[in-house]
Image (cartoon, rainbow, N blue to C red; front, side, top):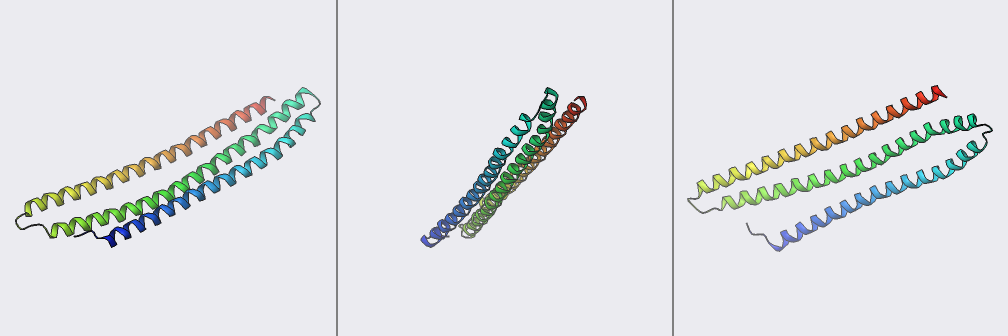
Length: 185
């Protein structure tokens, strides 16, 4: 099989299209991140003035302590919410990248497989044993690559699951500590 200029141009065009798609995905994720940060910043500025007014309106140390305690829970909840939004943006953007890369890899694997099959069809007479060995090695490499992809996906899924569990545990611990502190106050 000869690799001609048309095939080369088509491959380069497909690669450029894929790169443009990945760039758009990255920019969309960045745009969502900027929107999240702008909204969080705007809310923080507005809330900080309201919180300051609440604290300044306290007449006694007990009122000040109660006001501070009342402000901690909503701040914690907003922080957790921000973290969740941030994780969702990262996860969805990463998921889009993963899909694109997996698709491109599948195309490349198919192209290589086709190239190998066509090359083996044109192998010289008497090279059957060498062709069989090559085919076996090629199939083994494809199986190994597939196994590696599965392991990587399992690791990513496990990391995501562990992150969610750790976040839930931290949130529960802080809520318990807040409840305990309120009970003492």
